[in-house]
Image (cartoon, rainbow, N blue to C red; front, side):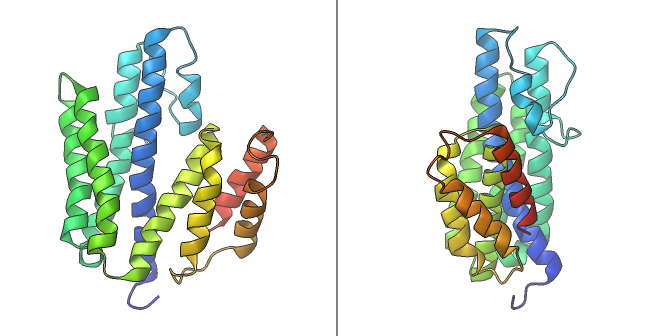
Amino acid sequence: MGSLSIERVDRLLWLGRYMERSYTTLRFVLTAYDASLDCVEGNWKGQLEELGFDQETDDPEQFFRDCMFSAELPASIAHSLNAASDNAVVLRDVIGSESAAYVQMALNDSQAAAASDTPLLDLQAVTDCIMAFKGSCDDYIANDAARNIIKCGFSVERLDLYTRLNYRLGDLRREVQKLASRIDRTGMAYDRDALKQLIDTVFAPTFPQAVTYEQLGYMLTLIARLF
């Protein structure tokens, strides 16, 4: 693990997870918002329950503003970006000022979008900053273990969200491959049996075409066991 303390390892992993959570949640929420415009009486709330959104309002616009901008709502994009920023500040000497700046810019742009008359347009800047942060990891993080811990965070969060939402399951094989190729380069302790079972599950001939909700639930337990 080199000079990385246990606390920093944990913060690096969660920095990656929170940035990926912000990105994937933003994409999913905007897709659900589009669906709600087509049919307000549709299942736009049900689509978001698995993410933890259980707001009671019947107003789609207010509901989705809360999903995106309510920092008090643990599932919101604002909450994830705030948590990512808290970790980036502490890790600035590890990840570099450039990478830390992209995290702060994503948070700033989210706050600006919340105050804007055209928040959906302004949220594109948030997406751009998150993608810039991901790219900056390769350019500005010299510590190989730190870089791979963050990327493992990306993968674990994507595996969790895609499985939880029954969303883009066809991407899970590639994501598991990326995680498996990086995890031993981090120096982190992890559950090898859980990773092996996860690999076996997503590479089964019937996955994802014939996957059941019970199998998805089992996958979530494996993902939770990884670290």
